[in-house]
Length: 440
Figure 1 (cartoon, helix red, strand yellow):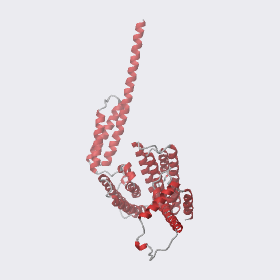
Figure 2 (cartoon, one colour):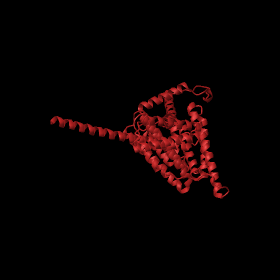
Figure 3 (cartoon, helix red, strand yellow):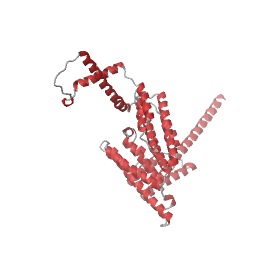
Figure 4 (cartoon, one colour):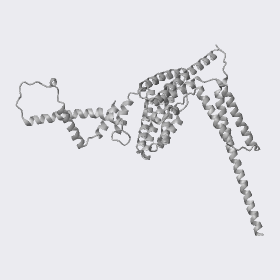
């Protein structure tokens, strides 16, 4: 608390009202006093009016006015200024109060190492929000962007230091903190990319670069299934409560998207649970594995992905700025239904065949012929496996067909260049022959 007192004292020493502001504040206080007198019950009753001296009355009035004004100033400094400072951005007069006092006080509530990591992550989000606001207003120049980027880098380093410290006492909690931090970085990077794509305000390239560096520095360790499962269920309860709180303020489309993601999360948790039970049964010898090795799923990997999805969903729900900047599909892609996958595969096959039919293929070219055969085979595989509801194989075949189509394009362009080069040489030869004939 001593450091907070020192911070408050230093800021208070630097914060002074101008003479005009003091006069205006005094006039407002006096005006309030005039139109809001004390009620009868609070007034001191007198049976007689004593004699008085004008000078004494003026002195009494001035002393009490100063006391009331001082009390008002105390309330203004303690309550009003910190509240107003929350909307301040770099360059504003109140910005030091926001960062030096408000955030220092908030930091005191982060007791555990995990809470400290979470708070530093929140500060990182705050700085990015400030940069985006300045960019939208056209006030983010290179110097300001560099300063904010340096601050964001400091918060990212503090998060990483906190995670490393947490590893010494609770490695699994540190791994969960890494997942949460990585999710935050992905969301904030997506928001900045969206701003750049939409041409919103100035550039935040410095901040974006810091986020990329921070993302590459995050490790990929994972906790145990039991620890992950507990945290995932806690976060599911949290995100459901948050969604219930904003349910009336989101659009119908956003509501549908969020509900769909919550359903996907439940399915992933159930898949992870079944996979974990199968692994446990196999390890204890109570059952014989019937699933092929390549078809087995890792329950820890599923839960880690699920936790990342939940963290991104929380940011989407709680930050209206994020909801206005990026689509939920870009942050947390929805699990497609069988019908949607069928529609997507059929659409892709139609596009591929239309593109293929637009080509003028030289069947005598060996490379073109073999690539065409491979393309046709992939399309046929996609169609047959789709009919069998084997969506994974069908989608893989579609991707293979796309690759063969790109190869066909390259081969046709190369063949075209060869023909053009031969035509050029032939023209030059004919021109030279004609010229020689004229000279003779």
